[in-house]
Amino acid sequence: MGNRLSKIYTRTGDDGTTGLGDGTRTRKDAARVEAYGTVDELNSTIGVLLACDGVPDGIRELLVGIQHALFDLGGELCVPGMETIHDVDVAALEQTLDHYNDDLPRLKEFILPGGGMAAAQCHVARTVCRRAERRVVTLAREGSVRPQATHYLNRLSDLLFVLARVLARASGHGEVLWQHERRKRDNSNG
Image (tube, rainbow, N blue to C red; front, side, top):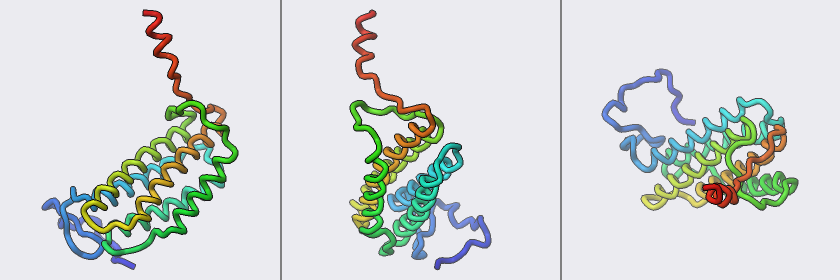
């Protein structure tokens, strides 16, 4: 277990650097910091989702577990060489995704973010997850990042998309479908 913070401000970052989990210092805008910082942002967006009304208990428990895994992943990205996310974690996301997706109707149209507050917030989490994945891919080009980190974020963004669909339907708002034909209608009026 790492050091616990007893004092929140240290002033050591005033020079534009931050400490990694292994004690080394790096720029605050380094790819590694961007990667674990965006994973932290993702964790926060899931926290906002959990604060929304209408999140069923099963999904709530799932998301809390995912928050813990994201904290682990952030640690793995913060401490070069650390291994916290494994193939079994990726497989668990795939099984969960299949479980929730099995009850949904097949997609025939693209879905717009919306469908009630919880579903909309789940879409925000999904987009932040995609950004976290992109940041980890950038870091992987620079240094050693285990493929499980990228795989986990890729499956998680898919799961968040499916959960947004589930939440939209559960809320009674339903999914907001992209109306691709609207441009033809709009152009015919003008």
